[in-house]
Image (tube, rainbow, N blue to C red):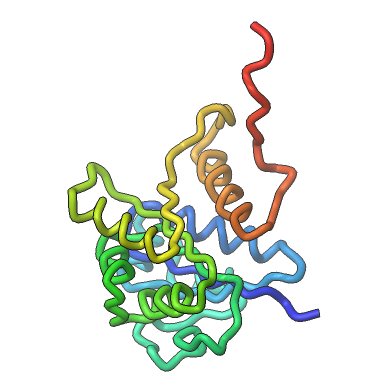
Length: 192
């Protein structure tokens, strides 16, 4: 049985932990493989926020590609994937996706995912949002992307930053049909 492929883009927005934890989760799943594109700014954030070098992050993926390698397999719709997650997604990358400005491998792979009608999940990390940011999110959504800001879910009663990040990552994996027992599911308020 062929393994499912999921593309992971890590860009220069704050929140490198989302992409890294997504790679770690995919590493443990049988039948799935991750294909990473880590931008230059994404690598800087991985170092600044997590003290991880580019090679450390790339080792978490099944395959890693240089962000300027427009000739990589990910740049073609014939490379079969379940889709792509950009975690975190910078506003520059969001703008490139929203306007099909495929000038690097992250935005090109996202463009391919959209044109092939595969699932694209964008985790934008910026606040406050300008009207341009909001319009770019609408444009990406109208093309079929799922805009998934990594907003904490406090009903899960997280005890650490890692648990906050994990909850969002597990919810993103839900969107690809990967369901974990570790995910906190809303069970209602119950009786008072």
